[in-house]
Image 1: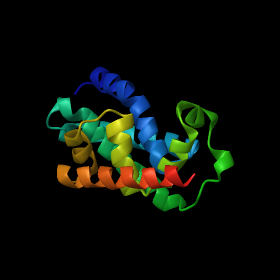
Image 2 (image 1 turned 90 degrees about the vertical axis):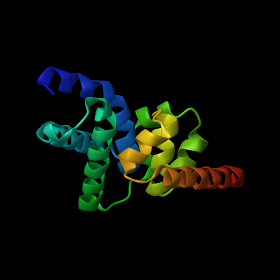
Image 3 (image 1 turned 60 degrees about the horizontal axis):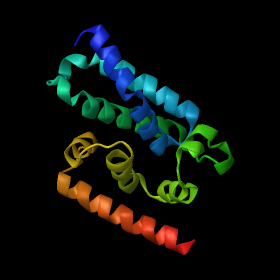
Image 4 (image 1 turned 180 degrees about the horizontal axis):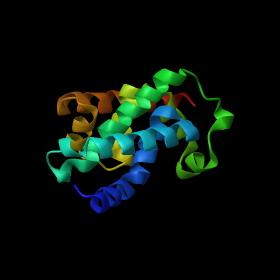
Length: 153
């Protein structure tokens, strides 16, 4: 993959990548750091990408790993008042955003990848390195927990 093609692919995925990073880190500065780290790692390892059509899935997996690395380094919580306006404004339903934020990563990420980012189950499962059947189960459990959270309000 040449430099121009790589840059175009990263730019095409940048919005999706930010939202995925935000769903894990919930801090603008950490998201930006993870995005930069993921782009750098993807550039350095671009020869390992076997098929360019899977670039989006491949770079999402790199980003998720970068986010988890950042989480391990920081190990802190983000107070609600630190959530940036753009993230709150992009959520059509604040109650849904709060309920989604309360889910554990393993249930939240499949929902974000499939419903917010429009990935197919196969793409999301590949990005998360889990079988499609496991992804479906996590989506089902995530939806159930969201319903309980939203009904409790």
